[in-house]
Image 1 (cartoon, rainbow, N blue to C red):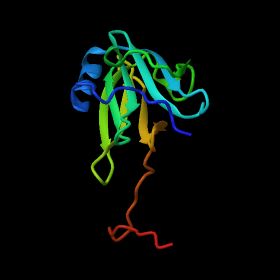
Image 2: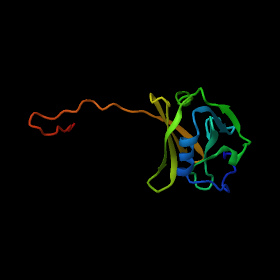
Image 3: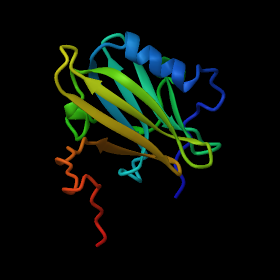
Image 4: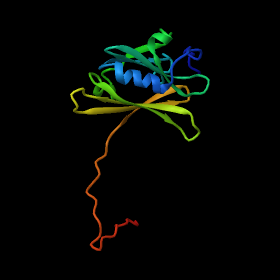
Length: 166
């Protein structure tokens, strides 16, 4: 079943870098997150609206090449899709009340911008939540990125690095 088309391919928008910089510099704290989806396919997220203190931005999939787009919500307007408040869902509940510290645009091995990653941090400096949004075909997949603590590294008594062979 195909998804309803989200009209945004004729938008004149800034680059992902420009839009990401605007969010990090001007957005303020994240207040709400809304998922847009086709009611017949309720697990396929087609658009995510991020509402901040000082503006709103949307993440969506470009229907021509299945790449991820980040645009001001006012530039695309309402959709005919169903919507649900996602602020209390994982991983967004860890980002609500935090500001964007970093935004990354991720490309696949073929050079297509297939994902965007946000680091939401407390303004006071403690704690962070890193969320990645990946375009897969015509839908968005949300992932949470977690830091893994490196265990203490050791060397052999002769000062040579140990190597696990097995």
